[in-house]
Image 1 (spheres, helix red, strand yellow):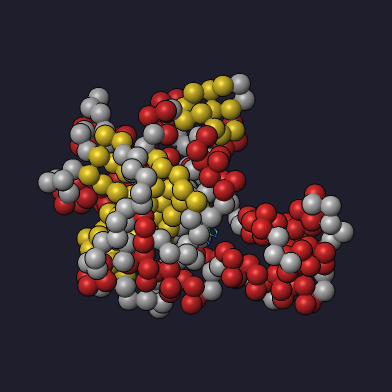
Image 2 (tube, helix red, strand yellow):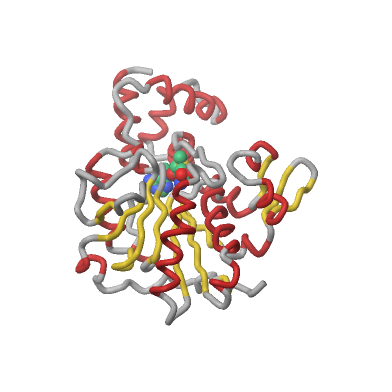
Length: 293
Ligand SMILES: C[S@@+](CC[C@H](N)C(=O)[O-])C[C@H]1O[C@@H](n2cnc3c(N)ncnc32)[C@H](O)[C@@H]1O
């Protein structure tokens, strides 16, 4: 790969997905894009770059998706889900007791383990949420990971990563070598393709936003821009949850960390958070009404 091919791909990826590659990541490009180039019948990275410059639509999507890192697992890092159960949801239940509904956005939800972990946490809350309307929207840039998330089918290896055995038995059905999450949990989640670089006001306003392990790949300006736009999509008393290597500190004052709750943030700027609410997208939202047990 020539230096100019590399520079072209760095800029291309920054513009299309936010991915910020340092000057020494040629090996990463080669390991991810050479197989893709070969599959497309191209001689190598040079020809791939030429095709991209020509504006080939499907190839653009394939290159962007091949460069995303989709690593995820059930109850990843555990602590955010403890916070969700012990801090976030008790507060939401109290604050929304009047309207009995909660909206949760799992931005960059990858293959679904994160939104399904949230759905399992909610199910485990039992009577506290009976009769509540619960909406979980899981979004990701990659259509490929979304298809898997929608199917709710996981390998033996995937269900062994982070998922307590009681949850596996309770919420999954084994079919041959794979495990499928039960239809009730699948029905709690709406999966949508969404690039965080683009406008997301159409999603409406949320009580809780999980946006974990995606901003680490972006440069500072992109992070700041996304934090500021997230602040407009969160209720003034809502919660933002970030990954272990991510923080708003030093980047924006639209959110503030909650002391002793690592990874948890509250919106600061009440005026931004209280800005006029955009209408919801035209399709009726899929909401689960939590049944009693
Ligand atoms: C490392 S995974 C994190 C998954 C999950 N949030 C977790 O913490 O386990 C990062 C995800 O971000 C998605 N992603 C990357 N760039 C994105 C963008 N610009 N907009 C939305 N999603 C993006 C990738 O497709 C990938 O599925």
